[in-house]
Image (cartoon, rainbow, N blue to C red; front, side, top):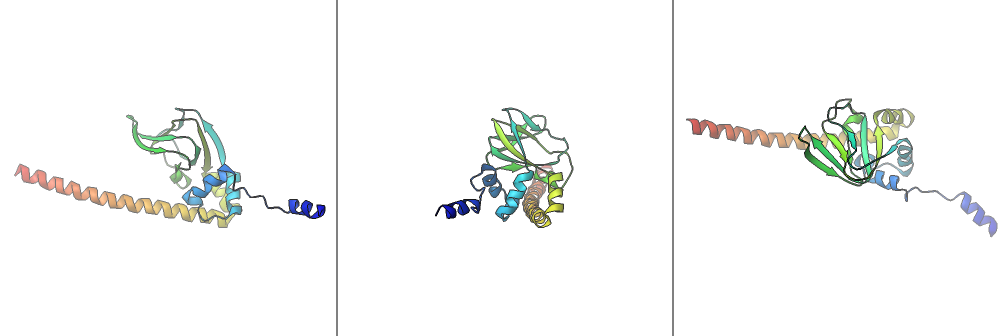
Length: 178
């Protein structure tokens, strides 16, 4: 009997499903559909960082190199010199994912609004994953492309509606001036 309990401990599977990082990753759309083994591989390459309240994560127009995933805390995404609030993000939310594909300047500023624990997933990490675990890297790229395509589609619809409104306003102005 003792031997079987020893062997069961040796061969017991260690699941990281209780791990908070693992649980956060499961909720991020670009990691959906990854197996436990693949999520563990991603978890190993993430960079953990903490921020104090009101600490700047990045400034608008700074070069972007990757995305951030909020493990716990609150982040404000601000635009322009007047710091117009674009979004308030919290546990499990992510931002900056376009920087995984484009080395372009950030389009907004991100500021910690509380004590913050975050995970960083950067472009070099993604490229390394593509080399060492191509199937996993390609799954992530496919989800990222799908998510960005959906956003672009929605943005195109919004732009179309705005153009129609602008055309209507221009027509109204012409009528009033005539």
